[in-house]
Image (cartoon, rainbow, N blue to C red):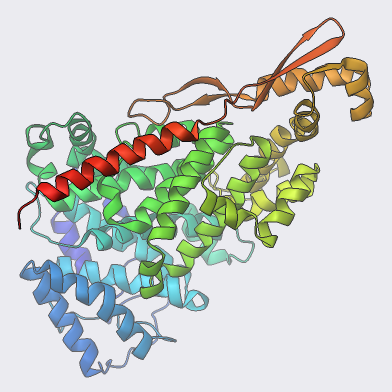
Length: 542
């Protein structure tokens, strides 16, 4: 019985996808010899694949480790052995697509094929075909349907790292297909197929998977209990108690943050994290790549919502964390390039935020920003160079997507406007409103009182435009800032400038708003803490 026939005989009304996706394009499964390429002509005949001994042993060993729930061995095979075999045998060619003569378990074959397609996306993008994109989507559908439509939790043990990378890769391939769809290189067969199968990698299908995993795991109820220092067993339910469902649900929340950010809905992007306390260690700390992704997208959403103080705090916390785990990513090659790029992006956006909203930050992070590479960028932005703001935004922003697929029949220019262009325009409009604020701030910091005429002379502008600049300064320096609560959207309006002023007739009266730190009290407290620690150590008996 073929996969198509098996799926047809196991139809269920509660599937998250219509079985139609197994139709025309996937008339035969890609890992069987009777596979058709989707355009009506059979694929070239396949020769029998000769497995290197090490590859066959790896596949069998991985299957046995998963079957025996040996987490340590799964971790070793997935994170060390798989990359090593890829480097040795599959640097310039695909992993074997057909392993049915080695393992017959359908769930394991689906998991293996997720790795197979992921390798093509990561290492062989030049050989990535339209067929690969569509069949990878079908494979994800099969995997998530097995997980979500099971009447009881499926018996599957995977590491948190593997589970995160399944969800992360699912969103990445959706992003890649959305960009591919806008490509002018599509041929007639591909366009015709996409018109007839619009659900493939659609926004709704991706959101449906992520929200279904969240609901199935009851992860939001578990997170609320976790925040209140209560046991989650009473709210987790049968599926939520399973580590597989619990972590897939958690990682789906982070994936939703990413998807909504790419779609430009920043408020909703942060709102999905309302039950995750980003201000203390939580589950995502076990997977560094997940934590970095979380902070990157939360920080960017804050920037676009003009919550610069929160963006600076978020980026600083993430970059300090990355400094601590740098050795881990030097030792592991997987996702190393992505982590390094996101680090550069966060430093760039942090520099933008500090120009628009200056404040003190950690010395180690500030030292990196004083490096020539960032110092020159900051100097140009402080001088009002809009082009530098634009370049920094284009480098540091995520890959934006349109919630509405591009029409394949051709559309008016305004309907095909690039999502990146829209977001860039919004950002630059905000920057243009603040372009004179660094200059205003520099003059205000020099005086306690100053005639408006004198300040307008320094600014080389008239009194009317100066008044607009001062009002803009007052407005832009008041931001919503998180103070307490679990939701990252919580906060209250606070003045973020180190100087404040008021205008009395023709005079500007200026005062510092930041009180100098009392270092003596700080050192006295630390001395008391060390003294108590010393007494406690002396009282210990060994």
